[in-house]
Image (cartoon, rainbow, N blue to C red):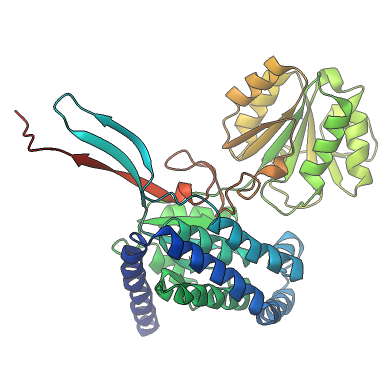
Length: 423
């Protein structure tokens, strides 16, 4: 066993050394070459479509045999539409402005020093994710555009799919004359590889975990490398007493039921007590009619006998399924207090026609994304015009909200002088 672990460490270190060398090249790579690589990768994904879908079918069959079901299985499945979205996402990233070399600010000091703050890549990014194979393409593409090399460690359930996708990305890099090692997939499902990756301080600059709470907790506890966290999505919609009925019904239903397995799906609905007698029965009926299980407090149960009682645990639960918890609150401040207490600082929305109340909500809710009169399912880098995203950062250091190409950069100061010395 010890020899196996040592061999794994050697393999992982080889990945790290290759990624570091590739990162040095990418940091100086012109925009045109990165764009060409992304377009070639998109074409390669389309050309390898039959291979990728066949690999995915094997993953799905294996996952079902292991008992994987519900949201995790839904996230794993690829089809022609999702494959095309993956290729289109790479092409969308190719159209983004190149963040590298951008001047964030520039000023001159009285002594004549010219100081510029300029965007630079983070370096090598380790990305650990679970069942979604499309993350392989999104993460690889965004890291490429932002001048970073990446080491991808997908979940064992999507290993075949991710391997096929990574091959297509590598062919895109090579077609553009860039090192294939700029995007590498850890070639094993051994969970020990994650532990090794988290200690590779000389090779890896940042770790980004994307998955369930247990993965985030493990990475946070074990990593010796800075972490950009993508925590669970306990998202809320608050329907204010001044909400428009049509907007409230449309946004609430879409926020929950458009796609229940994504992190931007609403898990808790809060309704102003002023709307409890009018809007609440309609909202509950809409959800139940769409096949959603509703768990509510006493006031919510009173409007429909089909509502099940909510427990304290429901307010802290990311269902990722057709289940929602509903609570009646005494106005916007009570809604904000609930969200800041039980939420995960991900995405929260207010439905109201009162602009003052909306601004109070937007200012006070402590989340990466806050919306007014819009669905929480817009919590997506593509919907923000970022081309794609690696995840929604729920932390506050370095990046927050959708993590796209620009968020995968740091900066340095370029100081130009003419012989100045400090007295």
